[in-house]
Image 1 (spheres, one colour):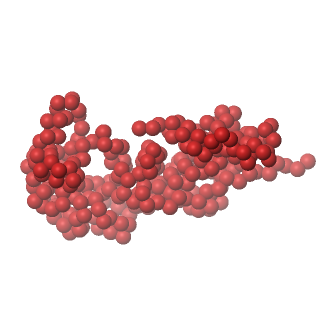
Image 2 (cartoon, rainbow, N blue to C red):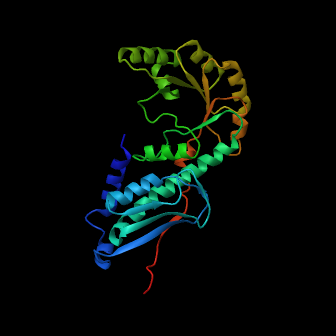
Image 3 (spheres, rainbow, N blue to C red):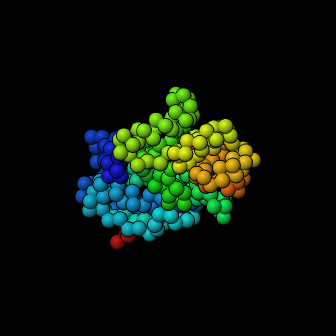
Length: 283
């Protein structure tokens, strides 16, 4: 997986190419300026560290002063940070820093809203792998800033036997048996989750006695309650599919351990933030 510095390096190369010809042509190379980030919309702030890294990657000598930290609830008009440095450098970094901040803050804001809807139920909100390619680390970081939890980071840190895996393998029992054999053979210590679509599959998954979590896919809240009661804490339970802000509390009240919502990262409105130049005092 790409780390934050690699993501920034590739993103800057994509944006700048062979040069910021607009800034280079109309701004003197030795000109200095100062700018502040202002919230134009309320929400939960996420991505300050990433934004600072962007400005420093463009010009290590840029001064970056945080006025607020990740996880802070912001309101319209709040000043979030101030940057001071070469004007050309600030302009090169501006768009990328804003892109990261706006998307991450949008995710954190949406996550915090969903978390508030299930407060007091004991259920934990999970993200999914429905992320923007190469930006997964940042988007999942934003989920945690908003109060949610990361499911798995990729295909490598947990076994998740979904319906297609089971169907291709000849059923849940065969899929789990082969998984256990594979993990032992390769010396891997990974948890196993199985997606189920009905009570018959739940029983089959439990009978393998080798899984850690059952995903209950596209169950209604009533069906989910029956399934959770039947499983009776023998393994962890996760609700997924068809869950919205209107019905998530109904799902959470069933006693399910986790609720995964793909919309946290794949159906998000970026938060409106703006970088504004601070005019120099006139003599």
